[in-house]
Length: 131
Image (cartoon, rainbow, N blue to C red; front, side, top):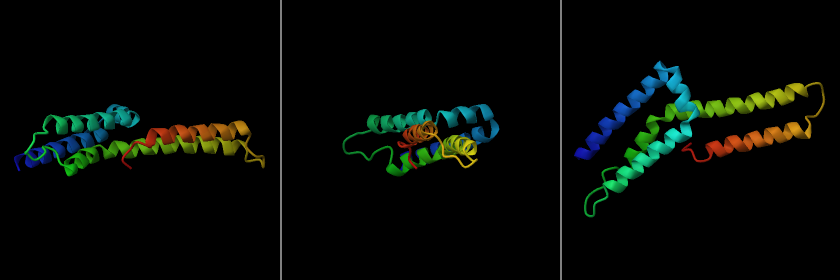
């Protein structure tokens, strides 16, 4: 189908541009990595709108499930960087708490609470993702 070929070309171009900008521009890489949730939400809203606006009775959909997945996969490089950033923040916190208590003492309730709340925050950031 024509729509399949157009969509395939569009996704290939988009994926290529996302990879290029990830490699070439540290500024854009940082913005899209830190704001991955907004980037993903924008892409999902775009896909939903395309599906909704092209929903015609008796006509095949303009966008298939595979097409949606391909578009999401095009920004996967930022998802991986975002997850790495989350993991790095957690490791830094845990290491700082346990380095302070490496002299044989148990971390305080406050330190354990900080770790707990940091884990909850990072999990909230990641729970909606297509991981």
